[in-house]
Image (cartoon, rainbow, N blue to C red; front, side):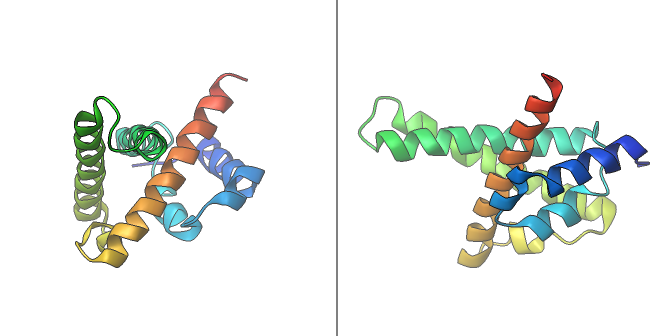
Length: 133
């Protein structure tokens, strides 16, 4: 995969902007996405599923377990998280970038994955806002 200068510039803008101050796994996010071209299917899939999982998680947290459709929302959330883990494992195999700290089944890895997903969702929202400018 070959990166373009615009990819570097775009990521520099993201990591130096005000949004990046809220990132919880900043260095991990940078190490994983920096090698990817901005139009990479891997980056698109990671950010898409992260934004979806984050949105569902926020609804579940706000509405609680007694809301209509809770079971389906919970299932969709878990499926998105598994898709992200699968993408990361394939990416690790292809690129030799270590993602085990996100994909193992330890409580620490699950917590780190959760923070990473939030960061990916922020990136997705930032990229969308850039497209509308």
